[in-house]
Length: 86
Image (cartoon, rainbow, N blue to C red; front, side, top):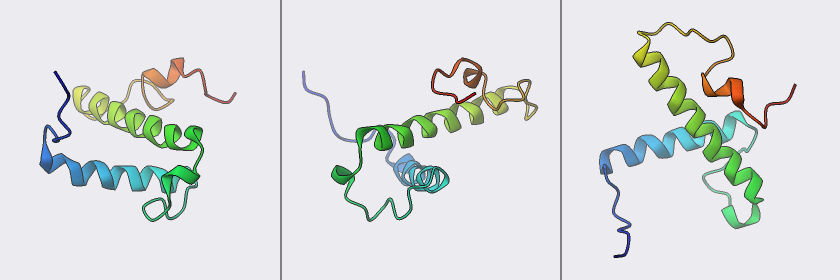
């Protein structure tokens, strides 16, 4: 059975696109929306997606903890980030 390209929640599509653009700007990829993604390295494109996931996890952790963060490094998973620069 083939996968559908139809979004599960179409209302979330615009919010995810906005999150992607904000995340790209934060990590230094200016004008990400108008840039040809094939010209970027897979590491750059992956970095945007990885940081998006990190932000979504952090938002959920804050939601579950009632807004108080228990870990000072951001997310709970950031503690185990293999790409974190010391």
